[in-house]
Amino acid sequence: MTAMAETKPGSGGPGELAGWISPKRAALCVIDVQVDFAAPDGLMASYGVDMSAVPGAIANMKRLVASARGAGVPVIFIGLETKAETDSPVWMERMRRRDGDPESESNVCRAGTPGAAFYGPLPQPGDAVVMKPKYSAFHATNFAEILMEKGVDTLVVCGLTTECCIDNTVSDAFHRDYHIIIADDASAAYGDDVHRSALNILEMNCAVLRSTAEIEDAWSAAHV
Figure 1 (cartoon, rainbow, N blue to C red):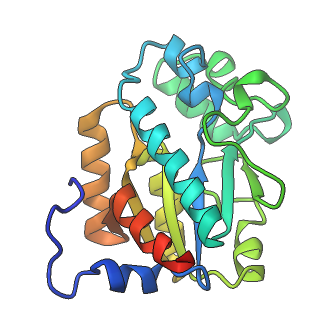
Figure 2: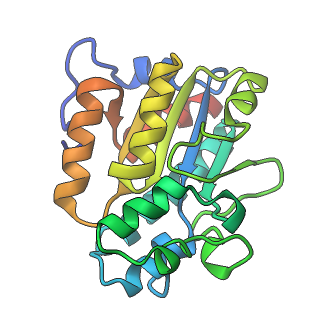
């Protein structure tokens, strides 16, 4: 789904959205915007995937990060970091069974390589950074502890990719009783059909979708 052009009664208009994502309760989570996933010379681009939606989504992510910082909303950067010692045997075997090359494909966002660096919006001093070994930001990380320390019960989510690490993180967050808002135009997948399908499923089951502009408007009210 695209962001709604009209606000439905009781569905989170500007005033209600401002309460939902107040700096007192929300954090902005920027997921997997790294060189290997987002840059034109990154690993995914070298595979020939459709990167056309990524630059526009990154431009909106930068707007959200600036807006969150202006409103005093915590910004949490989440990234994938793979290592030989933490590579999952099941993950590697799945690649093999799909006729992939486990050794080559496991190099995505390898710790210490340029491909693992954040790209586009970058962490600043005071931002939390969570590096995960798999898809969900909650898996084998201190993400839940960070949210608890900051008193967060609401996640505003953007990043890459909608059907993978966003989907897994949002699903995990929902099962842990977090409220989730997905910035639908500040998220992307390698193909608009995949992006839209993932958003439809997440909206149906776990999250509320809002546009970058709607979220900016809500946060701008917090520091007027």
